[in-house]
Image (cartoon, rainbow, N blue to C red; front, side, top):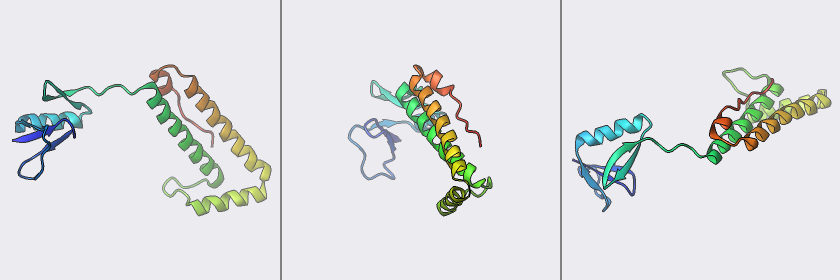
Length: 150
């Protein structure tokens, strides 16, 4: 016999857990295994009428998807700038020190080239971010492909 607590979203076994939340309800071992398997498949546990059951997770909101896409765009910008400055191996990305040295060397050898690379990547980033801001649906945001020329 296991217990499920809606307030914590956790399972409890009296043989293991010394403290079990007051709202926990007893569930069979079969239901426990079914709920765990459902979570592994991406479903969520909800309590309807006090009984835990599986449900499809809610779709992410437009603002959540936009925030995730902005993070992807900014990470892509950082990676593109790093690759443009250092041409790193796929298996060993450069350290922060190596990147700083590469940027300093580039600035000394070709200051206009460094500014051009930064401007090219920044323009692409800004274009992608503008597309995210202009998107009016989750699908439109998800359709934005994050790429940078390196």
